[in-house]
Amino acid sequence: MAMEMRLPVARKPLSERLGRDTKKHLVVPGDTITTDTGFMRGHGTYMGEEKLIASVAGSVERVNKLICVKALKTRYIGEVGDIVVGRITEVQQKRWKVETNSRLDSVLLLSSMNLPGGELRRRSAEDELAMRGFLQEGDLISAEVQAVFSDGAVSLHTRSLKYGKDVDLSCPARTRHGFAPSSTHLLTYPEAHISQLGQGVLVQVSPSLVKRQKTHFHDLPCGASVILGNNGFIWIYPTPEHKEEEAGGFIANLEPVSLADREVISRLRNCIISLVTQRMMLYDTSILYCYEASLPHQIKDILKPEIMEEIVMETRQRLLEQEG
Amino acid sequence: MAGLELLSDQGYRVDGRRAGELRKIQARMGVFAQADGSAYIEQGNTKALAVVYGPHEGMGQGWTQGSQLKGARGRHMQDRERKTGGFVLEIRGSRARALPDRALVNCQYSSATFSTGERKRRPHGDRKSCEMGLQLRQTFEAAILTQLHPRSQIDIYVQVLQADGGTYAACVNAATLAVLDAGIPMRDFVCACSAGFVDGTALADLSHVEEAAGGPQLALALLPASGQIALLEMDARLHEDHLERVLEAAAQAARDVHTLLDRVVRQHVREASILLGD
Image 1 (cartoon, rainbow over the protein chains, first blue to last red):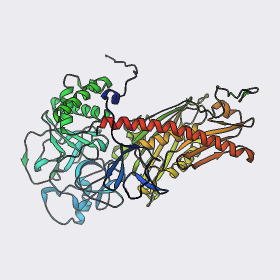
Image 2: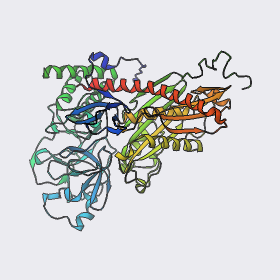
Image 3: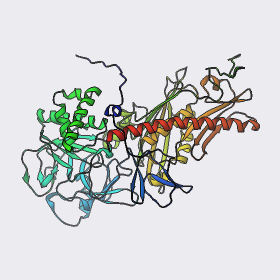
């Protein structure tokens, strides 16, 4: 069995190699941002002794009269319309509690969920009792933020047929024995298509690294699809071949995924991790360029620090060329 | 240790420092990628590691050490055990304990079995660790703006890898950096230092040799910008005439620590900002 050993090496911080400096106003907690009382205070600041003081370490953002400090990395802060990928932690009376990497668990109300068969009706007591049949603790779902409560908790909905349940390959097998064929669970899919495959890989990153875009569901040309959740949970899954029409429902297809698809998915996952380690924003183009830059290397080598830097540097250059 | 001169005639201490001099401090933020915030600090030979999770939902009842749990309910604990090398012990919190108007701060102190000269039997769960945990909690409840996160819980886990005096101070400093790394709003840095009193002179930042000599020692945690004291702890006998001097020495040392930590944080923020681009 071949074994690889590595010794620790002092590495120059990447920011030096980039050779540029930031123009932002950086603050740490306790710093006075301004003594001018005319400004409104936003997130990351507090008022103390007639001065506006920073409460997090980050960069100051000034919009007209509003000053806020954007921290380097925070938990996900929900905004209406965001796409999130979350994991069910609890089944309560008329709702599910979903963990979305935010300060409080998000809430998915029973009334915000599609019924199998796409029916539109009032949820009855039988539906409440059957909740566990739809979603159990540990299931992964993709959903959209419907509303944000005053304490910051987020309410989700999966009303459009775009959203639904995923089966996490990276988790120890969650086999559903005694799975009644009538209560089918569909990994629903963009454009209301049923996907054949309900399996994939979840990558957890910091929410601040996911770029806000028009759409967060991407079919990458390399053969896999990706859902970039705004909360930092990224779901990679094999692109389904046929896209058929069917009225909503929850079917999870547990056919084995082919080796080629698995390799693509693993490579994508390692690329995403290397982008995150080098603090690059994640969006479909950057992931794709990183994937292409990583093709000469073996999948397991991508995670080595020097190869990671090389790949990300190449991605950065390609993105700069594309912009300018 | 009979005959050990803690302070020589020329004013040098056992390790060659002056009375008010600190030991060399090196610190790093963002040590663990998986935790919300993490930091590592070395103060002389004292090494401490701090990890912060949160703010997150207050844990329900029945959460115990990760190895016993399976499935989704255990995922949090299993992940944490795995990712932080197994030294996390979740204190059983209940949803009833989650405060409706502010965040719950939960601190845990642990010292590695190899951290002291003699191998320690119980890394955590003993009286001293519990007391340290409570003190850390008191310190951080004073500094973290908990009103901004009602009903959530912030977990701070600190582990001492090598104890050479000033463990409380190192833990507080490491935890401050970790909380900053996690993006949790704080009133100000919390900088801590220990101080002692020998031969009419106040010494700052005691090492293990000086602590073991049995003189009075004081631990101070300070919010430097406003000069407010977050925690002051001493359990030895000290004449009140000397208290002022020792307190001032500790406060000055804490401010010096602040200067260093400030530099570390600014460097970290600057680097991250450059990488992210404008």
